Amino acid sequence: MGGSQVEDSDDWELTGPSSGVTTMVLVGRTGNGKSATGNSILGRSAFKSRHSSSAVTLTCDLQHAVMNDGRVINVVDTPGLFDPAVSPDFLGKEIVKCIDLAKNGVHGVLLVLSVRNRFTSEEAAALESLQMLFGDKIVNYMVIVFTGGDELEDNEETLEDYLAGCPPELQALLIQCNRRMVLFNNKTKSETEKASQRNELLKHVDFVLAENGGQPYSNELFREAQVRSEKFFNQKKDIDSLMGYSKEELQSLQLEMKKAYAEQLKQLTEMVEEKLRITTEKLEERLASEQSAREQAEEEARLAQKKSDEEIRRLQERLQQAHEETENLKKQMSKCVIL
Ligand SMILES: Nc1nc2c(ncn2[C@@H]2O[C@H](COP(=O)(O)OP(=O)(O)OP(=O)(O)O)[C@@H](O)[C@H]2O)c(=O)[nH]1
Ligand SMILES: [Mg+2]
Image 1 (cartoon, rainbow, N blue to C red):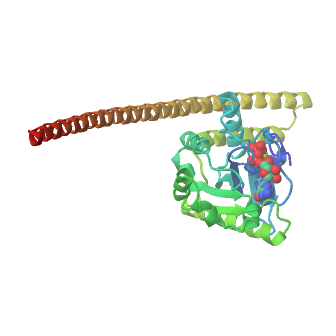
Image 2: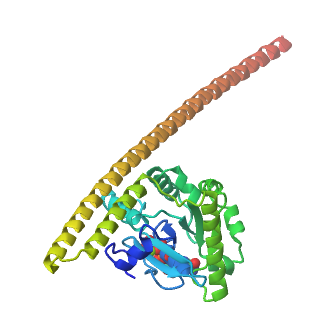
């Protein structure tokens, strides 16, 4: 299925308003293994994943698989959306695309981290942007996927060993997510290992869903996209069932419907861009206030140092003075003894 085409009839069946499927969105820094993880979950090479110094996934894409038990899994792969190099324009459009693909709500947000890369403060900031844009509640749906399970195994390390030395930002994140995490080896050829890591992940996602009253994650952006899509879906059905119209008339109706859809998409993009602008502003404000607090602390430390330097100088002077006085006294005493 060509996952990203909204006009694709297969997509409409799988992401259409009444479908009951599990939708998971992969997020995380470029190169952390999002696409490889998507492929492991789906059990096929659905997304392009390879070693490259530049970003491999350039746009959001939805792919699906039917599990052995009949369960339908949707996976939305994304580029490194909140990477520092991403322009706000691109980010806005890709987020709208992602929302559009997952408009029935998200059952699991899979934050992909790699045990091969250190968790950076940039990654922590990216996560903060995600929370600001979609609301804090999104953390309730988050499961952390650590890729590179094979490399830990080669070093005879467990995930717990690895986490023992991880930065405080990551420790805090793990607590926020109630330690919902799973280690993935995307290189494994073992079918048993593939099934076991996938089942562990799905167990977390099902648990998250149960914890959230069976309701997938949604916010006003998703609701907006859903209302729009339902309207489009119904219009499409109406046009498909029209009788007595010529082929040209039907084509022109379809064209109008698509135009209206594009217009609504534009409105949603504007909504997202506005939210992003506010998010960026808030982050900048916070960074600026942190910077000024840091500068103030540095200034206070500098003054304290200056004060202590002066104190030391004064003490040294007093010591010198006392030393001189003692020497003088000694001299006077020796004169007295001679006399
Ligand atoms: N050894 C090992 N390598 C992995 C694992 N998962 C992913 N990789 C490798 O990591 C590299 C990046 O993987 P991708 O799946 O392309 O990463 P991505 O997050 O989708 O990257 P972008 O699409 O650029 O955002 C590839 O060379 C993968 O083969 C893993 O579990 N073990
Ligand atoms: Mg990718």
